[in-house]
Image (cartoon, rainbow, N blue to C red):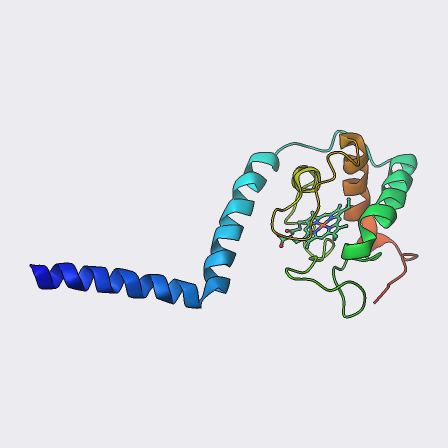
Length: 149
Ligand code: HEC
């Protein structure tokens, strides 16, 4: 009985150590779960603004001013040049089918804690963020967008 108890404690401890040795895996798992949790709740909200030329232009202007520093003018995320940090700013254009406008709205207004992704809740109005989402979704179709990589 005592042996089983001892075995349980030892394996519990060694499991913990194993987790400590692989913080990348555990952190990634928890981060994905946490991110997935609030993403699910917000993904259904549709963008209330239509992609009119004015809305897109405003979104383009705001994106270049507020987001391009980290996500790149072309939206492809952190490159070899420019600011370097970890976790890196992901590409916003290669996975736009996975991420909805509602998720962009939620992520941009809250930010992502423990990463470089800031909260824009006091910087941008919800409408401005919806316009940025309209623009982000259309970056891949723009021929004139400069690649800064
Ligand atoms: C100071 C750098 C920085 C700025 C400025 C910034 N971001 Fe981010 N952003 C990040 C980082 C880093 C992440 C990755 C967070 C993570 O690892 O979950 C991120 C994540 C995101 C995500 C989630 C992407 C995904 O698939 O998980 C979206 C959407 C996003 N940013 C949009 C924006 C928009 C729109 C702006 C401008 C309003 C902006 N970001 C400005 C650094 C930045």
